[in-house]
Amino acid sequence: GAAMSAEIPLSHKLAGNSEAMVRSRVQSKLEDYLPAATDSVLCDYVMVMLGNMKTKDQVANDLEAFLGDSESHEFTSWLWQLLEDVERRDGGPPVLASATVKPATRNRSRSPV
Image (cartoon, rainbow, N blue to C red; front, side, top):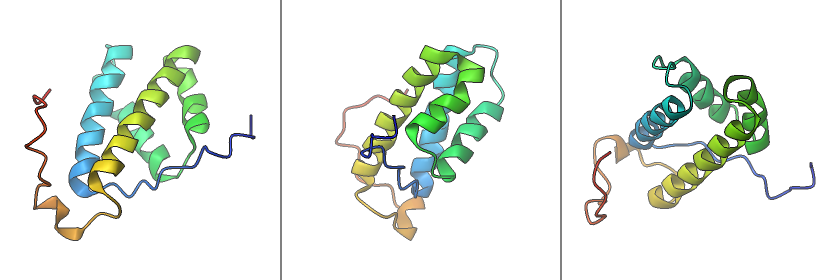
């Protein structure tokens, strides 16, 4: 439905360190769905779609051919949640220094996966 006006594309201005993190999370998540997909082709495709400001529905539709119907929507929901978390943590537009200066996330007790 096009009535979902809340479906805004993300700003996709991922800070340098965030993009690398998102990319690796996307890659490992895709491997959950497609154990054979150990190359980064599909992951690159997802990142390109994000860069092209595609909406969640568009990304899910484009991935149906690869992941299947329900899986593509499940993956896209996971991806959007991840990107929202990243944007919230980055707190707005990326700062140029963000690639070198790590944000103070060490108070988060999350073991590196």
